[in-house]
Length: 246
Image 1 (cartoon, one colour):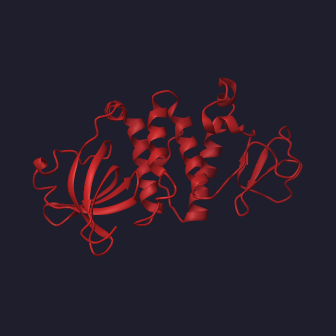
Image 2 (tube, helix red, strand yellow):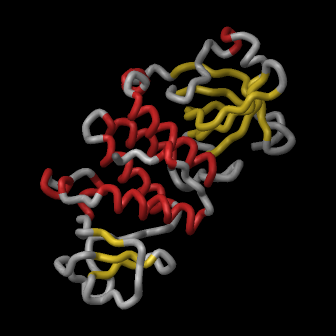
Image 3 (cartoon, rainbow, N blue to C red):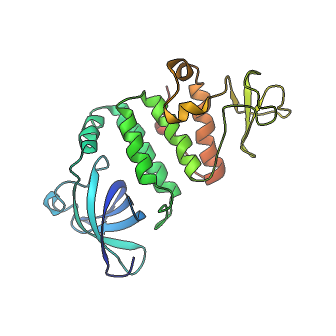
């Protein structure tokens, strides 16, 4: 964006920080411009300034004026008239769903730098994950989100079969975090703290598996493995509040 240029875009608010007595520094994930940071002057002083729309669980239509550096100015903000905002209103009424979605926002704000993410289509990833909450169990949507976000960042883990023999029956399976490799019990030769009691079909990650496949997912093992992958590869530290699988 050129200095002074005004852009219009759809956006998710993924981080908000108080600045001075009445302003807010916002981190926005936009549909067409990736991560954009902006200052919202007077946002704390009056809810009328932006119509009370600066909430984490809103799909926003924004106008931003590009600044000289990385920080831009929020000119206008309003709710998008769409079904997804009706869905978000329902998510706000569910504590566990709200915690999960806010953990996704927090994660993206940690790993995507200012001005980055344009080529990753993370906006759609969030939209699809939010819509999935209305259809699928939250634990499944959360795990699929973590896996798919890693995929878009270039970490393509295959949990469906052993990397060496391509087998799917020699349980348990072991994951080598350093190399991102998945082995069955016959092929894995080194100690590992990451084990899965079963392999996971590719259909799980697209929500197209049958009910039995979902029931066989080693939930806690997989969530720990995925969260530790973020720490190992991207330096992201999770706290216990962000652990969704019971």
